[in-house]
Image (cartoon, rainbow, N blue to C red):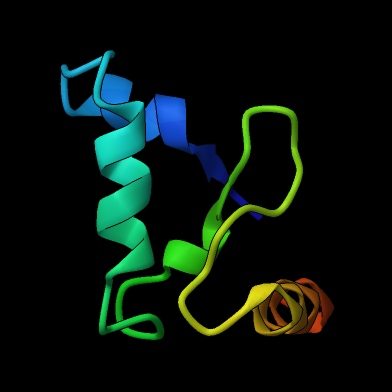
Length: 70
C-alpha cells in the first residue's frame, strides 16, 4: 500500500512550506472515501487527524491491507 505524509503532499504541490495547509485541507475533506485522505500519515509514520476520527482511519487502513490486490 502506498502512503504519503503531509510534507510529501506539500512537496508534490511544489509548496514545501504548506504542510500545515495540506493537513487542514485534508482534515476538511468532505469526500473521505472518494478521495482517500486516510492514506496520508504523519512523517514519523503515525496516524494524524482525520475528519471521521483516528479509529475510523485505522479501520480503513486495516481493511485495505487485508484485501488482496489482483
